[in-house]
Amino acid sequence: MPKTISITLPHDLGTAEAKRRVQDQIERMRKEYVDKIGQSQVNWTGDQAKVDVSALGQAASATIDVLPDTLRIEVELPWILAALTSKVQSFLTSNASDALRLTHTK
Image 1 (cartoon, rainbow, N blue to C red):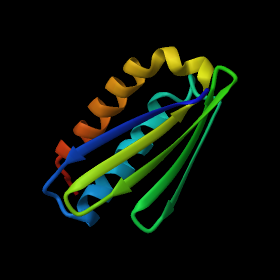
Image 2 (image 1 turned 135 degrees about the vertical axis):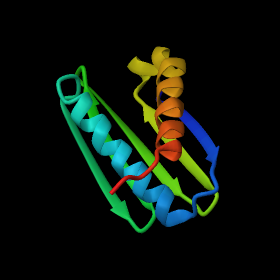
Image 3 (image 1 turned 90 degrees about the vertical axis):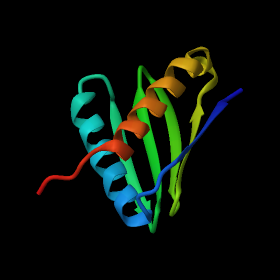
């Protein structure tokens, strides 16, 4: 049975800035973990991203909703990866928090 992870993080950045930071963090993570992830795909529709990742022969999916004052992430892990739920949740929370704290330099 799949396992769902739900993460909600408050922010005061507004939707556009939070989305930009999340997009930047997703790209950083894709580059950093390119050798560990078999495939990843991110599709944005408005302020919602659908993320599909395959690694170790398993597929996981996530939805990221960027709201004016909240970032909401929901991840569906296949049953075989359910044992890693706490590690995945900690990793995602840390990366999302980092994204919301990033300073933008042009």
